[in-house]
Image (cartoon, rainbow, N blue to C red; front, top):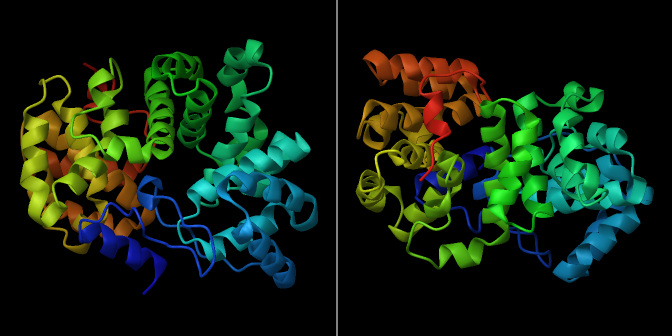
Length: 360
């Protein structure tokens, strides 16, 4: 089974992907791929295979807290590209490992432009996220002004859409704010207009959920989204994975999560349905007619944001799959779906955009 097919299958079975992409024998366990914005690209490795194997053996033997030191020691020997070749081959879900590589590479070189160009969008931009997380720990007195112009730099413009870059800024903002989300979202204000602030917030919340996954998974309430005074959709984009897991997955628990979303204050119901759509990308991709089961509930904004949650990501991964999903819808919902398929991720204009900014 291909990596993409494995990802779709796990999502379709209702698994929160908490264990998808397990490490090879003896390797450190992969962290949740649920937070990846799609399966990793398959590419031919060009680096020295013997060096890659030596690195992987040392990396696998290191305790979790020692992996960064291993990465930093290997940056001069194998390079960022070679380390990514090794990590992608061993860990089908490599986003979190690439975070650590990005941190280590920037710490070793302090060459942001060079490392960003080496990272490209590999491991679903996880390497780029790690670079920003590490860079933001330096010179905190100038951080806000640096954030304001960072994504306009040439290296970023060569590799990333601006929305993808500011999503990475959000990862760094949460990390450097020690997961004080109000402080992180305040830093996100520096990226520019509110749509960009939202995409920054989505990165900040993604980083929060990745870091505190066990604690959040153990809870049965709406935390941390019940504390989101703005950009609640950025929070529910990840929270609903846990809600579905608690409800035994989409095949058995979809109606339970829909009821949970409908029980929320009307102001944040669209945010919850957006998270539901995002959590059901694979489930809907397997059977496109499921878009109606997933998203045709609640008010028109509830339905729009749910459709966008499915189709913006799906179209980024596979245009034809997105088109098949849109063919199942009619009327305004079909129009929203086709708009989402054209926009893909990080659009600055779309139907219902104002609902992404709402909070409690």
